[in-house]
Structures are given as structure tokens and as C-alpha cells.
Length: 149
Length: 162
Image (tube, rainbow over all chains, first blue to last red; front, side, top):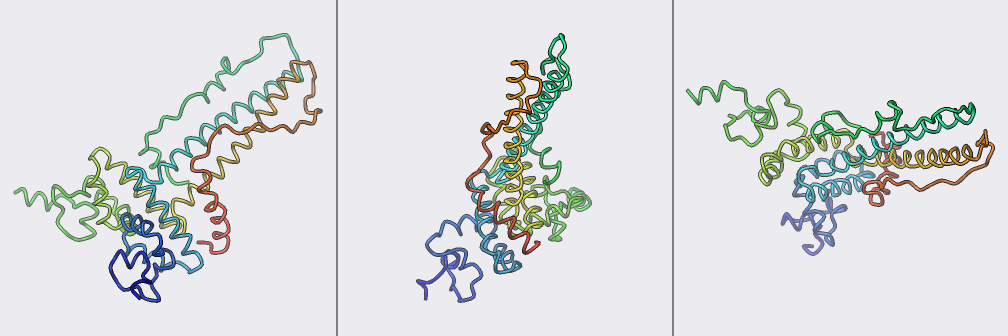
């Protein structure tokens, strides 16, 4: 039966029983997957987490733990939270662009409906639009402390 | 005198949890203050104190505060959503970003239409049927890898309401 051990039991050098909680999600053909998860969470924590979940979601949970563990190993300081931070910045920039574009549309629409021989307002002269050109400059810690999505 | 001072100053959250004396070189003390017991409890529950101390030891002191904050964030996310943890938040942000890219592309196309028709002297650009949509220019972080998570997040959360 030793040849049928899952990656977790093989790594932990223990007997892999039929009801091993880890074996469906850490097969023996991918030992690195368990090594990564074990380094960050520990086998005991992973087992407890999976045991608390219904069986039909455990595979997704194991996958997400592996993904987060990999992120943490690649970036020990930020882990996958670095991705959160990056996406938040991208969203902020895109929202700013969207607002600016919509204001420009409104200006052009207004000019089209009421054509007058006056200087066209450009975003560079418009103080309202200039506000959206300011770059977000939040440190990582401030971003984290501002709350969860 | 010094040992009495050490006893009289409050232990860090970790040492308080373990009911042990907090030493001056306790690795947790600078980052898990005694007035934040839940922060350490969550991190300990998800990662385990031993793993946390191994992670902290491997980096410089300057980096430790950021590490602790990111671990606390991940732990909180995992406790709120035991199936997807932080990945759930990432998937939500990705979906939001994709929607924004779409809206921005539409808005830019509309602006381009107005600019073109206005300069041509046409007063109502909306009368032209216009369906060209420009591609978004913001590459979404970790796009392809997250697709299966973002789809399944929705399905599982509807079913399990975790």
C-alpha cells in the first residue's frame, strides 16, 4: 500500500489511509503541490480547513490554497495580496479615464447641440478634469488598511 | 528591575494568546500588538504561528510589517471565504476590471464618433448607427489563470452560500 500514498502522506512519511483527507487533492504525481501548501500553511491547518468544508467544494479550496501558497513563495512580502493591490490600482486608473471620457462626451454633445463661436474647452483647461489626472499614491500598508473589497 | 519591567509591560498578542512571557527579542511583538489580539488569532488560525515566524525570519526587518499586513489580509479573506479566500477577492476585482474595460472602450468609441461628426458639422451623431468598439488597453492582472476561479466562485457561492 506504500506505493499508493498521496503526496501529503509521502512527504509526511506516514501511512496513507483510505479516509485520508488530503489524498484526493494532493495526488502522488504532483509532490510539489503539497510541498508548496505545506510550507505556507502546514499540513495540520490545511487538513482542518478542508474538514470544515463540504466535500463538493474541497477541490476548489485546495486549488485556491495552492495558488495562494505559490504567490506567497514567489513574493514572500505581498503574496497574492500584491495582485489585489495591482488590480485596485488598475481599476482606479480605468475609472478615472472613464469619468474623463464621459465628461468629454458631455462637453462635445453640448457643443454640438449649442454651437457657439467660443474657445472649445479642453481637458487641460478644465479644472474639474484636471483633478482626475492626479495619480493615486497610496503605500501598500495604507491600501491594506483601507479595508477589504 | 528589568525583568519586572518586562513583566509589567504588556505582552504581544502572540505571547498573550500562549500565556507566556514576551521577551524583548520576540519576533511577533513589533507586529502583533497586545491591543490587536484578533489580528494574531486570525493569522495563527490560517497559517500557524510557526509558519509565520519562519516567513518573518527569512526577510529583512523593514519588510516584516508589510508581510504581516498581507498575511493578516489573506487570513481575514480566508476566514470570510474558506473556499476561495483571497482568490475570491481577486476574481471580483478582475470582473470589475473587465467591465470597466468594456465601458471605457464604448465611451471612447462614442467620443470618437462625436469628435468625427462634430467636426463634420453634423448636429446629432446618435442618428448614425455605430457599433465599432475599440479594444481595452488595460491588461488585467493574471487574466487567464483566474478564469476558472471567477466562474466557479459565482456558482459555488450561489449554491453553498459560504
